[in-house]
Length: 271
Image (cartoon, rainbow, N blue to C red):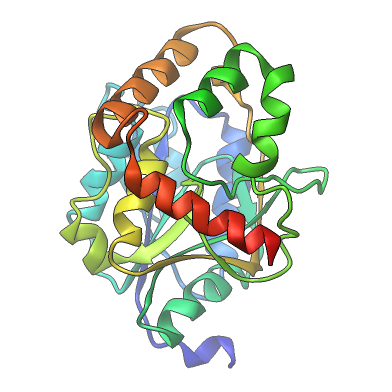
């Protein structure tokens, strides 16, 4: 199937907050070189609109205060008119064919409701962003006792998976996620109780109730991924707050849906 064979409209939302101009320039080169046109809408949560000039060819909205990652993307999701919508982080780059490859499984199969790409660091190393649904122990150990988390991480990060084939995912990263726009609207986008962190895990769970969230290795992006919440500071405490809200919503010890879903992936590992 050639690039001209997809007669679809693709929108995308980008949320920025005091990002560097060089980072913005790299991302915009990717967007503008995409062989499948992308209708990009930018929400700027920065205190000033000093980055506005970079988006003269795109829709730009400046709020003047940080309303949160999910809430800012929702401002776009609720208003766009498209077939598929891509949630994009500012710290990513991608090739011309990436968005086409990401969208194609949803065009081909009505049961696929969202897709995520293979993600690499700028030096080419693989980022293991495909995960099982987290337990409180997963998140607690990863932040406070990383040396004890390694054994849990083997299963939680699905380290047995080679990232060389398509796979339905229980927990997908929101750094570059494409989904059916109508379904995102139906779900009212992200749960805005999450200012940052775990909002993508929550969204993936809700998307999965309507179809398959698919990992597609044919679509590849580069992601800087600073892991800044692992340092003690404001973002660290926001992450802890989000974790509490997530487990309050879905269950701490007695999340039976999590148990059923994660158990099914243990069977995949054995098979």
